[in-house]
Image (cartoon, rainbow, N blue to C red; front, top):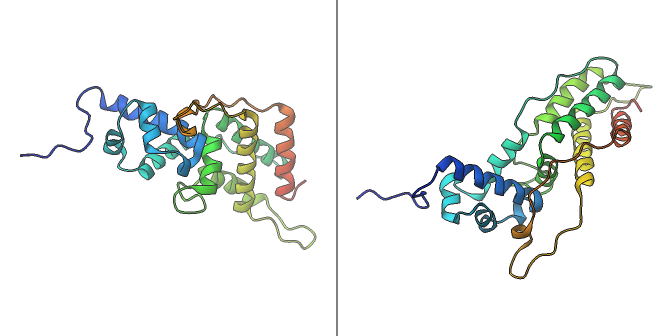
Length: 215
């Protein structure tokens, strides 16, 4: 007799179930990080059992990697041309535009860098860092005998600064947790991050210019 797959859905639309799990997992991982979010809480939010979650994604880490990949999905803006200062300003604005369209990206990226699977943000390479570094590298030059900033390290710091700006803009007091529920169970879905004001974006651009040796 053929053995049925453990957790295999018996009815309903498997793709809708899968997408529902991904939405629930995105909210949970963005609220609590990889370590804090539990498969039990994700399954409960999605309205499925844990066996169904494992049927679709194999493991908590497998689910996390799909969520992270989806959060980063999409083309990055065209790289601006001009002086170092003009290029950095354009790149930073591009990061803000990219992040504003992806509600959970900033929190996921920061939490992954701190405590993703493995160590040091090993969940997924950040394409934004590569994009920023490749545009920045040809424009970095030595000044007064000093070594030019490292393009990748500079790009990584600026991307993290943009993410932190989005997180600060959406921070709010944690909701009260009802008895018997964990923080992951009670976490509300992430709202689309508001685009920071022009003044705030200008401050980030100024910081990015200093990091790139142009400020």
